[in-house]
Amino acid sequence: KQLLDSGQSPGLLALAEERAVGWCALGPRAAYPQYAPTADRRVAWAIPCLYVHRAADRKGVARALIEAAVRLASENAAVVVEGPPPYWLPGDEAAVAEASGAFLDNGFEQVGPGARMPELRRVLSPGDHD
Image 1 (tube, one colour):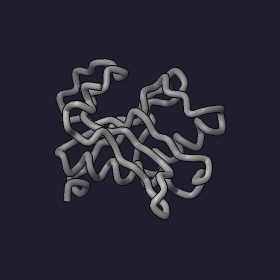
Image 2: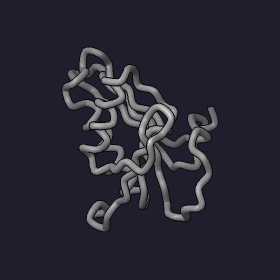
Image 3: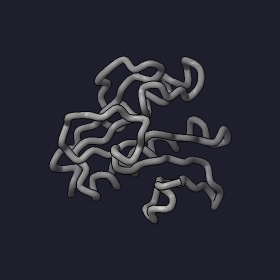
Image 4: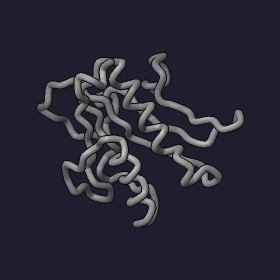
């Protein structure tokens, strides 16, 4: 509720023929209590939630949302973008692999095993800020 009341955009919406087919929550990492505190002082953003409607499954929607989220984070001075929290569960083992793959395809690296979802992070390079 605080996030919505802040007036900031809490995420991105994917549209196909004027229909919503996906959603990606994103914003400064500190705005999301599901992430453990960190001593890392770099400006960090996070993608705590990603949803793709079944009708759009496996059509590149997740990858496009993640790509747009990274671009938006970069435009807002982020240096690091975190993937979903490690206990996030997008579904069965195949869904976890597919969700992880969408992040890995967008330059994220696995930095830990996580509880349900591997810990994923992308450190933005100077070229990401163009």
